[in-house]
Length: 73
Image (cartoon, rainbow, N blue to C red; front, top):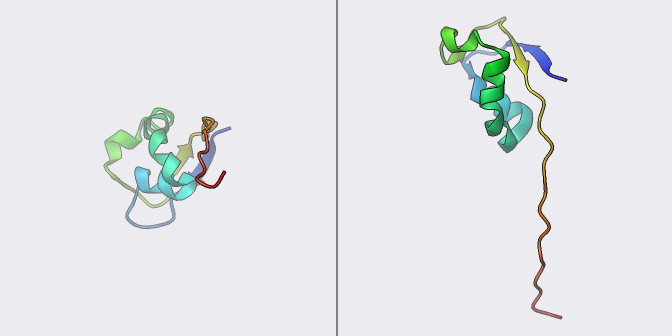
């Protein structure tokens, strides 16, 4: 379920906001965030104070099985 937050800090960009919320995996969510918030493209790169932003859900992380090689048996 998408989460709506209110901007309370200065000089925040959408990519910084996603990185702070989700860590490195937040980079993947930029397009989804812009789809949920179509007006963000018109206000510029810096999010204004008091703006309400809907953040997308973090997709499930798929982990591939790794073969572990050991030198000691």
